Image (cartoon, rainbow, N blue to C red; front, side, top):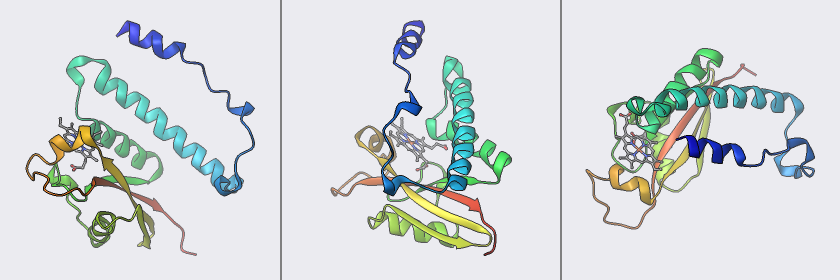
Length: 167
Ligand code: HEC
């Protein structure tokens, strides 16, 4: 464990300010940028704590998706932003990840059909579902109860709900 931590520390730190000018299509307004910076800061700070809590002590290890659900809970408490895993084209690994609402069911169908994201505004929230790829190292577990018989990519989804003003 000690050797790994030292190796991580030896990686050169990114010097953000010295970067080249960003491309036009990646730019957002300063208000949106500040908002995203605050949110990302909170998400990374919470993730750091949860990763320590779940993985630094061997006896505390849990499944990564479950550890992140603790980050989701903290995010909701801080900002009212909700996040939730959904199964898309593999059996849900937990009953809690079955697509539940009409939005989630439609989103799962759209992502399974090949869309990278699916969004809509509903009851005061901007809802967005995006793809979480289940790659070679993931599908073994995720398709254990439904062996693969075709070549389609397997995916799960992440639904994010952000409160929005009525405009
Ligand atoms: C050792 C078996 C195993 C492997 C390997 C694995 N998972 Fe999982 N995964 C699980 C289990 C079990 C759950 C349900 C956890 C719970 O009870 O909340 C789960 C849940 C999930 C979920 C929530 C959606 C769902 O279907 O329940 C996502 C997303 C997810 N895993 C992504 C991944 C990704 C990405 C990988 C590969 C990088 C991966 N998993 C590899 C066992 C595995």
